[in-house]
Every structure is written in structure tokens, then in C-alpha cells.
Image 1 (cartoon, one colour):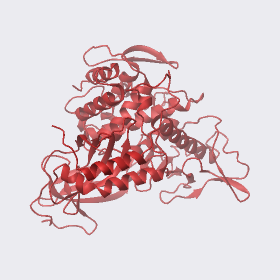
Image 2: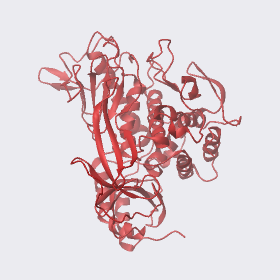
Image 3: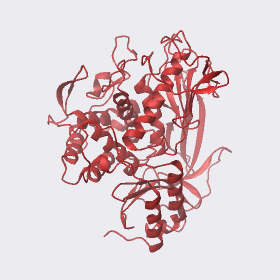
Image 4: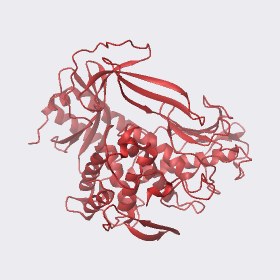
Length: 522
């Protein structure tokens, strides 16, 4: 039986509903008048950063009442992190949780409340009761360690969270987060926070329009139309921001790695296209939905063949490749890296195990969607990841969404060992799901690229189109996935999202089920 929330809570949600604006999707392929259940009529949006901030503040003001409604323990408190309102009035509020003042890792949850204030359901990262006998660690702690509650797996325990920094063999900065049982000293989880897209050489997007800002007698790569996004030149350094890229005549780069501005052009353009895609497809104003931009850093390190997203600086960083003239600034790579920030700002999927694979796949899915959205004649949209970055020396891409195993390491289908793979390989299951949901199984040619996507059981899957598929994925990510979501949970989350968007008897929901079955997530 679905509980009703208190009168005070209902009033608060009514206030939130009044503040949160609802936008309509524009520019979708095969557009038609919106009808109930269409993604076009249910895509959430905020009219301004201040509206979103006010909605979160309102949710936080009544967090104690919400905690009581959810029957949380007396020592538990909720911290409102995001609020999304659908066109039908449903409000999705994302919370972090604390216990006796300590952060609960894996304790995040999302409430789903109808327009009338009735609590419809709750999505929790863990269903375990949060309780520990003591909040004092029994093992020696480093001064920098943080005491937390670990609820990411099994029975919640008191734990210590520490961060170890360094540099990986290829020059990528390392920031490994380690969770240790505060009683036994056992490592409960460790994962790398610096999220990379893979190695490569170079990619250029041809002649593109850039939004720049006049400064003094020249111009700078500051995008005032997109939250003030800036692009910096690290000058082969590996820390700080470096120098803001500037120019005298507002004509940037020459399309080759011999001109240092060329890498900055591609990075700046990729960030702008990703921002515009978020706005057009999801009504989202930037990575965190608050209208604030990340920034880009190019020319990182010496002969560095990688790119990465870093939460701590809220920025994307690109190396120059082995010859220091082949920047890793492909359009889908830029979309991939920026989308790690989106995941961090929504479901915050742990970067390990199956949730780590879903994290990486989300960046591939959205990076691919950015590439299609940009409609760039030099880099035509496809379901190949990093196809313009010749990492193998034979023109083959970094990853394939239609049949992930073609890269030699990625998983086509789920099995119980998938979570043990590197997250760039376990992502294959979700990438394959997204391709099947978008385009269906079997042989076909799209934008000049031949695909032939198989299924685990030999079934035939009929796609619903990429525009609908990405709406389902984003809604699942932002409203139903949590930090510990695994592949089984992801199926449930996308089923809920498809039901919300298109209805319980819709062809879209049936396609979601068929696509997951096609990758052996049943």
C-alpha cells in the first residue's frame, strides 16, 4: 500500500511543483504533436538555475518529514541533492543520507511523488537498515581519512574513506578512493576516480563555429552562451589550469597539430555541442543542471595518449598523443568525458563493478548521441566509439556498440563475471543494449557504416529509434539509478522510465525488455 506523506510535506512538494518549470523537447527526429506518454511531453527542465536551487532548498527544508515518512532511523538524515519534475506533475527528489552525522556511502535514494503529494515509490541504493554499534573506528586512522558508513554492499558497517593520489604508468593522474572496514581493516572497495575514455591519436571536426569572448584588443576561448565554459592550455603541465587560450583575430587554429590552438578548438567545440545536446534533448542547463560550466584543459603532459574527466576540478583534460601533435579531442570523446560529470551529478554510479560499467556506458551512449546531434559533416554520427582515433593503427575504433566484443575485450552479453572486467569492457553490455534498443538486431547500414548486431538468444529485436532510446536512458539515470545500480537494476530503471514516458502497454517498454533479454539481462 502506497503511503501518504504528511500535510506539511504535501504542501512543500506543491511549492516545489510550482517552482519547477517543465520544458518541451525540440528538434527530435520524426517529430509529431505530443500526446500523453510521449517523451516530448515529459522531458523535465528547469527554466533557470535559481528555480532548480529553490526547488532543492524547498525539498531540504522538509527533509526531516520525508525521513519520517520513509521510516528512517532516528540517527538518519537526508540531504536533498536534486529535484526533477515531469510534465504530469510527478516530482523526483534525489537524496544523500547521513547516520549520526556520518555520510552513508551507498545510502542514496530517490523519492517519486505524484502532483497531489502522494508518495508513489522510492528507489534506494540499499534496502538494508542503516545501523552500526559504534561510530568510533577501532583501527588506526590517517589524519586525512574520513569516517563513513559503508552501505554499498551487504550489511552496513563503520568504515574509513581515504584518497590516494599519484600518477599511472601512462601519465594519467590517479586518485584512488579506498573504503576500509573501521573495525577489521579489510578493504571493502577501491576504485579509480579519474575517469578516462581510452587512448588515441587525434580527431578534427573541420571548420566549426565557436562562441568566444572579446577581451582587450583580442579574444579568448570563453563561451558566454554556455555558462562561461573556458578552454585552457596546460603547456605540457599536469596541474592547475594553465593559460586561457587567446587569439588576436578570432580565427583559431589551422586544423593541424602543429598549431597549438587546434586542440583547443576541438575541445571548445565538443563542450559546446555536448551542452547544447543536454539542453535540446533533456532540457538540462549544463552538467549539474545549474547553468554552470565545466572547463577544458588541452596539451596535458608530454606525449600523453589519453583524456579524462576529474570531479575535483569539474573539468575535461586532453593529452596530445604520442607525437605531441595529435590531441585526443574527438567529438564523441569530448561528449564522453563531459558526460562523466553528468553521471556524477545524477546517479553518481560507483566507478567499479557493474555500476562502473554502466558509468562508462552512459558516457559512450551520450557521447555517441552528441555526435549524432552535432550533425558534423566531417565526423558523421555512428555507433563506433573513438572511430577517428586510430589507436590500433588500422583505422579501427576504440569500441563498437553493435557488437562490443569486436574490440577484443568488451562483453556482448551479461554473465556473472562481467563485474570483474575493467569498466571500459563491462560497459559493453549496456552499449549493446542501447544499440539494440535504438536500431534493433541484424544487418543494416547507417550513415555509411555497416552493422550486424547479434543477440544472446538469437531473438530479433526491433529498435525504437535513438531519440527515444536516449530519453529512456537519461530518465533512468537521473531518476531511478543510484550509486550501486547493477545490470539487473538498470533493466528495472529503464523499464520504469519507459513506462513513465510511453505507458505500461507501449511498444517502447516491450522494446526495452527485448533489448535487455538480447544481452542476457533477464
